[in-house]
Length: 537
Image (tube, one colour):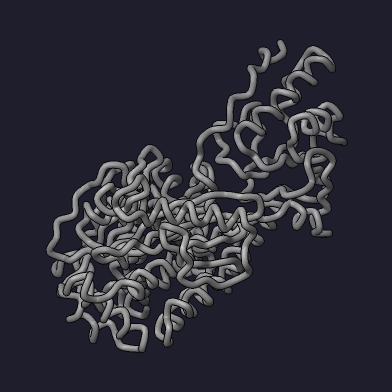
């Protein structure tokens, strides 16, 4: 066998979206005595793992998303001939390609192929700055993968708990006397940084948290001018179509500025500016919630018109404990449609422009949506909007939309789930817009009572009851007509993982998933569980 052709220079890192999973410090994995991992090359500080991928291919780059720990037993090295020089050249190219693909670390398994990590690989990883971890013979790769997913799940739970606590604290602050100052204090506490309301000229209208360095304060003033101009400059937000938000990164601080809508004739818009840890993604989501509240608080009701005044009144009623049905008349529309939107990579359109196109001011930013290859709850959409039910929603250039059916206010939680499902389908199908379609009153499901359907579903799917990932995979796979690639895209995992899960499901259920009758019965059962969950939320 001849040696592989010379390795071309490593390509520049690909423009992939940032990982949506919380990072796991490599040091945390190295500290686990049950794994026995040992780092033998590459940088040791600030290395974070987002997920794990195992591959024995000479070129795993097409299968990497970035942020992985790539695990290999070195089986592909057996194909290299030509002695030590050829092996050194091959491993140098392997390390370079792995770095270019954005992998966070390389794990090399001892046994069954190699007794030690090849010295040439150690040197190549040191040369290219790739952390290299020795995986001992007694540690299966699945144990490393399980440890990473466990850590990611725990981190996601902490993240979601923090977001929930922050939202409750901000809502409570908005109902206090001097609500703007109270919201700033709550925000500073939950983002663990500095928060301020700034005019475009830099005048401070309130702040909270540790006073930042002069350079950070100066940069904050510049961002406030960008998003809160008075309409006559480059940073103007009204008329000139200026940005609704802007960011800047300084050593040790990530600055975010949000234009607030509280500007009337002859007044400049205030901007919410937040300085937080650049390695703290949840801070951005928390700040977005505060920006919505502060927009309502700082804008006089008379300047916003009757519709916006009604929306603000509804928010206040909700904050002090009213039920959704009680505030519905204040919103001005009997039915509402929920829209989940994700920005495509190529678009430069702002959230404000999307809100204008949809014809609603009720739009809020959420976390980026790229479903994680983990059991943790998936993040939210890039944007979530409420649109009056009578308004037609069409595809928007540069955005992927999932749209619910129009529903009354008290059914919005269910509509939100339907919009999320529609967005996942749109992303999987590469469609610009997918609408959720509720089954008609004369469908097959209407022929069976809810109790009977629920009992049948639980009995049929009992072998999967303790494995939400398997249930989720089956649900997506059936909804996408058994398409492996679309299911993988929808779940954010590799298609081989989908195949493995479906094979496992078939074994647990002891059934043939290629049988159309079996698929229909399973889909009926899954939909029955969906309806039951919606009823009890």
